[in-house]
Length: 226
Image (cartoon, rainbow, N blue to C red; front, top):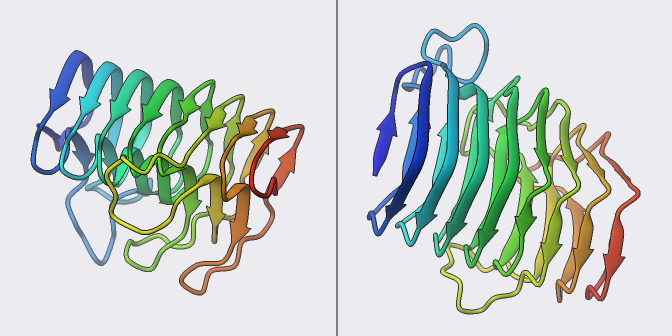
């Protein structure tokens, strides 16, 4: 729908729907020797904001930031995207804030892969997806593993087992998954009615999770809370 390969870009008051790949895509160009997403890479995109956007029924991601830093994603709604409603990938430090976001009826409501450092996901609602949110490390992208503080605070992750949501994988029924993620703080979230598990901490692609802090969350009526 909208492709951003520049710095200092603001997108406001837009609806992007029914595109065959991504609704909004902010990205740096590929450079195997100096991959985008770090302070030293010349191709890292910097200083973007997505505000008051709706991304519905696109072919892959709704709102997608990759190899980009210093971002704000706020007051957004995403639904019916077969990968993630909101995705932040391959950046360290990301220095990215996600707040007042609603993601529902996606395969995954919110996802980070190899993305961490001075970031926060706050006061958002990731419910009625197949999976509510994931903080992951993967070999398919650079800058693995995911490391550096991501504060995941004050969010709702409820009833993430919608069989009618589009899907790209078989995972289902989890509120929040930390898969190979490191150094994250998960605090004061409401995690309820996820029929497989409320919060899963596990390894993936050979990456073991470490230094994650989970405290002061409210769990209710999950298949397994933690």
